[in-house]
Length: 146
Image (tube, rainbow, N blue to C red; front, top):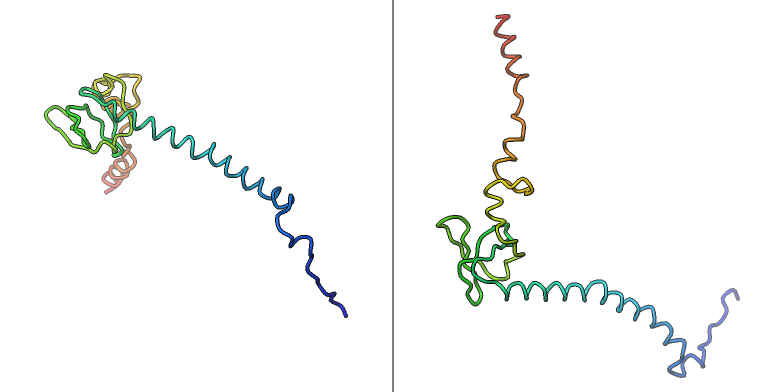
């Protein structure tokens, strides 16, 4: 016969052994790593976000998750009223607030602060005008030969 008979091992079926405990160490180590690398930092970030939202006050400058920047006019229980431009207000949920901006950053963006990458007028001035000279030259050459 080519295949030998297999018999059950009586020692392994006797219950708990030290070998079964040692096979759980890699799994326990994985849970510990996941906790310290993923769960704990996420909880810390959530706590910081909650502290920032609970500390909101009138006059704070904020950034929303939709990319809207505004100044807080009024803080309510679940909502915040923002002034996004002079005379224009918007109501947003508190959980849509991503970060608080330093005081005066809106004015710096509007006035074209050179250290600010979001300046409005300067970026348009520095970008070169689109070159359509090739099309104009071709039109001029066809006009000359006709």
